[in-house]
Picture (cartoon, rainbow, N blue to C red):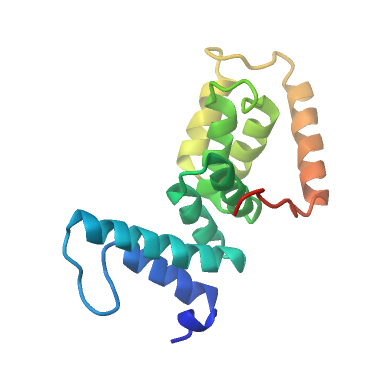
Length: 168
């Protein structure tokens, strides 16, 4: 099987989904807690293989399955940087709504939400609409806001995102 040989990433991604839904290659699995945990572990393993090959959907789903927040954010950023709209929206919301002062970053939030909204992502549009309304803390000078968002976009375009998580 191609997925077990380390290629292609799409086959590995599909296997990740199959195990995630409780389907194994041998049979439909029962719904015991033990089998659910085994399927989750198998799903994470297949998603990781595909994610490491640059598969954006696998990166997104892997980010949602990991208990380590730092590693999860690493994979979410990878998917978002490849144009995955749901990952972009989620990343924007993390920066926007985080109660952790280190994670809150208004410019990052707007940057990622705008990218997702430009692809038609409804939730990203809603989040932007809330922040652009009078109910929230939006700078009165939207031209200044646009300037900083554009500067962030230019910086992001120059970055090749080669950072690696410290503990994989």
